[in-house]
Length: 110
Length: 114
Image (cartoon, rainbow over all chains, first blue to last red; front, side):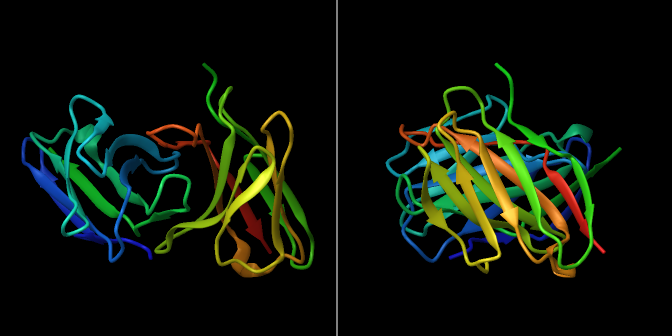
């Protein structure tokens, strides 16, 4: 039930855009997005719920396609500080176990 | 508001020993989840405790156990350590009783088994 993330790794130049995808084979209640910098703990970015509600940082945008059980994280006008590993986490129902993807390594270069 | 704290931050043990890790959640959070993170494996879910009861459990052997106290602090114990247990162990706290169940992670405990 682990979600599948793509791509596994991406390298961007400052100012470029990127999209990270997260797919699940199960119907989901929520999708979470986290970013982990090297040597640090994962940090919450955004949560998207079935039905359209979402909560997260103003500078981060994401979508959740309930029909496809797929979520996408959009990183626009990337900055050096965006570098890190991005994880999606999924929850089948509220209160159920979280499953995290294997992560997408994002590197932004000058 | 203070964040999630984990102690100790680093541990070195030898095979066969046992270890106990501690996690203090954000004040007011009743859920604590534990994850094992190794290179290439991402975040592997160990278990979740909510109001002192194990609510969810991942696919780890019985050598991995945990508990939660009335103040929501949680401990994780690994007995008979194996080399493959070397990893970063993260705990995360959450309200888990509302609409949004975002998790807040602690800095982790880096366990090395020799």
